[in-house]
Length: 214
Image (tube, rainbow, N blue to C red; front, top):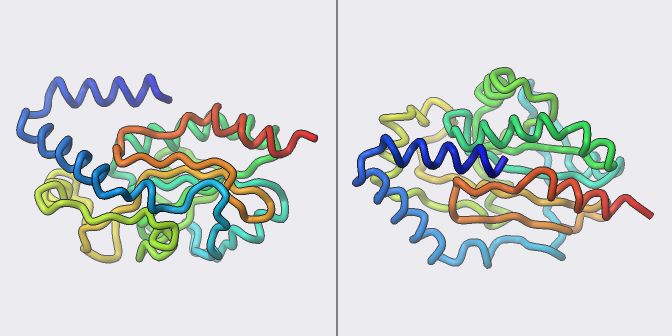
């Protein structure tokens, strides 16, 4: 996955105007300076209750899933985000390995269920995708941030992000990945203010393996 993310980043740098690149870099730097990563839930914390609709409108409780083994929870921003799509596809390729390690995967997104279904179908996702349309769950984890106005305006105009969400608030969750044990305790956390950085699935699976191997 990391090689694919770096290739995407390099391709963007080759074609995007310098002022646009600077705008994104400034936004990432400001988010890092905000301390959001340090304030968010981390290793050792117990996750809040998570009950959300899946892409077909069925209610899913993560706490119920935990009865069957550790759960990997990964957030993605929306089907408009190329880095998110690369990550979702990478997890699809590694899903059998995660199941073999005794783990389960849940993706959470602020997209509406209809849009989450479209993203799942486009990427051929064989795992559960939950819609946190108001970012209520992400807010409970402390990972929601306000997108700077220039960045949000570009997202709206160039990527038409407004069509993906139930509201037009300029906010998104960090692209975060957690490993949660059967007691609901976070045992591994990947958080970055840079949306181009994502957890490597093989490394996350190794954590799950450590939890399930006697």
